[in-house]
Length: 137
Image 1 (cartoon, rainbow, N blue to C red):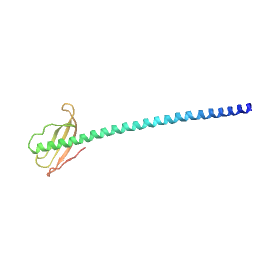
Image 2: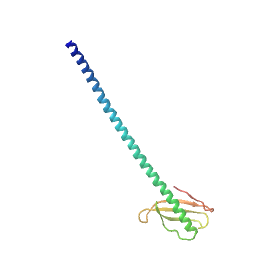
Image 3: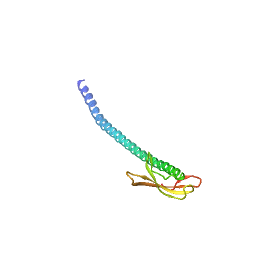
Image 4: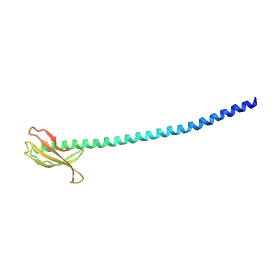
């Protein structure tokens, strides 16, 4: 009886060693896969956040141009010489006005960078009815 007991013990030991060698690599591969997928998701989230930030800045700049154009139009129609418009999106000024101050006109507004250097400009068209619309982006 002692001899058969030893044979069963050695058989159980062999089975345990075989399954132990399979589980450890499987767990390591699964952990590595989770780590890589987590890093990939984090990278996509950072890229999306950056893109949203740029879109927000562009929308604020367009809004700044439109606000400055409305203020310049009002000043021009009142016969006041248009001044620089300090807005949240930057400082804007009238670059060029073509047409009568009370009628249809086409004009250009520029955003100033540091100092008085023009950074970006946009053209607007003013109808006789007073409708203001951008001509260029």
